[in-house]
Length: 77
Image (cartoon, rainbow, N blue to C red; front, side):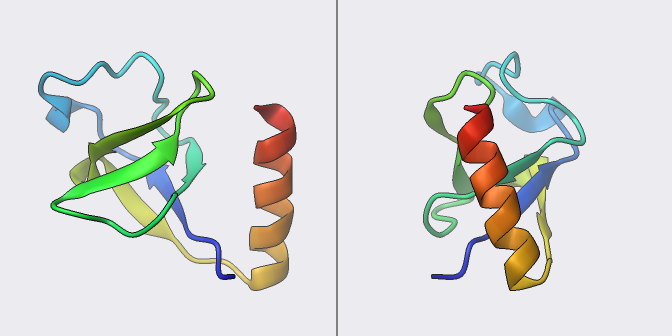
């Protein structure tokens, strides 16, 4: 299974969403595909939420690095 990651680069387009659990520059693993301009991530609260995809940019990395990041994010949660 290919893991996908995004980095938060913008919190100004959150609208009614709270940005308290997002950090600029933090890398988040996506859960599923982007849908209707929204992306589901596990934020700093440890819960998964939908956020506007416009707040993020995709991050490309080799599969071994993606797996290690996935494991590190799981341990940190």
